[in-house]
Amino acid sequence: MRAQTYLRRWALEQDGEAFSTPSSDLCPVRWQGKKAMLKVARNEEEKRGNLLMVWLSGQGTAEVYHHGGRAVVLERIEGEHELVAMVVAAGQDDDASRILCRAAAQVHLPRPDPPPLLPLDCWFEALFEASAQGGLFAQCWHVAQTLLGSPQDVRPLHGDLHHGNVLHSAARGWLVIDPKGLLGERTFDFANLLCNPSLAVARQPGRLARQAGVVAGAAGVNRARLLAWVAAYAGLSAAWHREDGQAAEAQATLEIAQQALALSSET
Image (cartoon, rainbow, N blue to C red; front, side, top):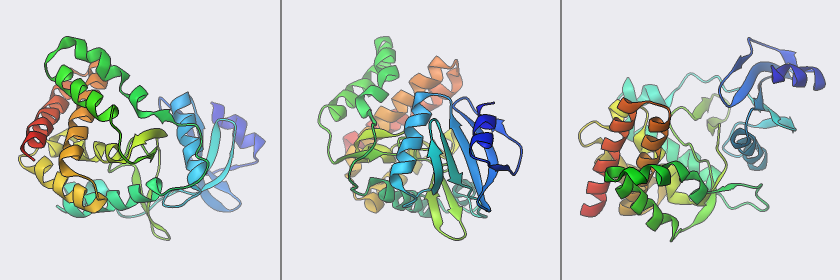
């Protein structure tokens, strides 16, 4: 595991079992006595996200204690509050959405000299390819083309903002983790949270319409444009599910896209 290299190189004290995801090798560690997480990127996407975390300097994000090469040593967040539980168990969907919007606002603050980031139009390649099938994929791609061709309020973006990527620290409040490191229209960053915390929740009758209003108000974005971005993003997400052979998930995500298309035309 690549993590072992950095454990030795940086004289880190292992503080739990190492594990891997498709994109990273991770290991709980101690950094100068502090609880931390060693994260080693396994691909360019994750490396780009690490660089964005370094640039954000712990402002609304997990703090980066040390970094170099493909690795970062991050503040380990072990809070008692979870946004998924707020939605599913406590029925606090509105509150969770507002917390996510406040967390995103920290990422979107103007700062000088951002790192190299992926332009948002490059992120939509899978939807472009899926659009050849016609139907909803083609409709979502048409919407995406329109939005990408006329971007508003371009900022560095998290790129994967959802209920599992904002964690609560008892000392510092709600903090963002695991960005993708994109560059594009600010409104895009709120589309994914409306497809979460699960497809079942996101597809509940009336949920998208209500949360679109909550998020638009909390984030200061146009509701109709937000819904258009939801349609574009849901189409992209469905295309990814399709590539992974997840037909049921792809169909469920397209249902969200269809709802968003209908709502955006009503607004």
